[in-house]
Image (cartoon, rainbow, N blue to C red; front, side, top):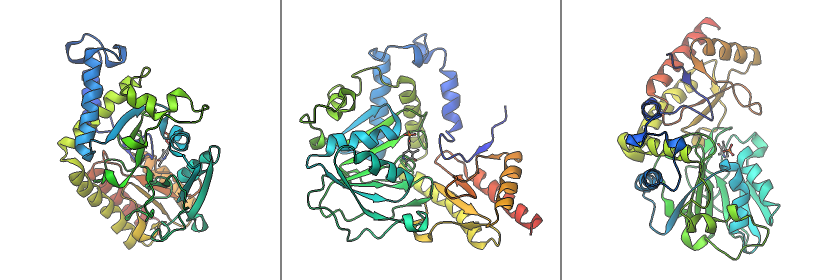
Length: 360
Ligand SMILES: *Cc1c(COP(=O)(O)O)cnc(C)c1O
């Protein structure tokens, strides 16, 4: 067996101990005589898995009792529709456009009401987070929407927007569990799990209970109503059982690592190694405004496309994989999620230094 250092933006690296445990439990989960994939979602043994996963997430994020945690399907993108369908009462919402994912959510919301783009960083290829201290929030906005960490562009919010009393909704797909979050700052948080938590397909919604309504337009599918899912503890139909089980193992791993404050320290240390090198290098430069740099996704370029391609090729051969940047930014992107060990970043930087010496 030989594992690479996987810098993929998603699906991405998972903790090796979690994968090993899943392998050990594959054929016989805790004496049940079957795999988690094979058991009824209504069984006692599975009930323990999903309940424990929820409790561990609640512990980690310190989720207040008046918030529901829903384990759903359809990935983060499904929530681009579910959020406006469920939360638009006045039919108005304000979106802050900081990248492709926020833009997609904004475009989807336009199908269900009036979505306003109240700020954007599109003018500079989304390389910064706009000043959100005094935005033209719509008087009748049902919520203000942000993408908390911009996976493609490598920016993240260091300060939340001033929503002037409106509910804040956040897509945290690519930075969930990377640092502590004050859940009560939000009306709703959702995250597709395949960046920092588990296998693609599962999306987790954390929603304040008073936002769960039944008076929705008739067109809203039963499955997309938060009310349906909340009333049935995410078991209205068969949930993505195996994916939720892996998420549960990762929650336990984060707890063992010391929780979200420890995770943040670990992530800051990793990010600093890479950013410090980018700031000192004559060949490689980061593409993002320093104050808005993400702890999770680090895009960088050499300024020369041929050299970028050479770097990606040689890095791949050396076991540093999935470093090619998103096509809209070019260059490289290193995603250094929770499960990326410090060693992976140290070795990548050593490789970059060596590449720089040999090619300048
Ligand atoms: C990856 C990603 C998505 C899309 O997730 P899917 O599960 O593929 O729908 C949405 N938002 C952010 C911030 C992401 O990183």
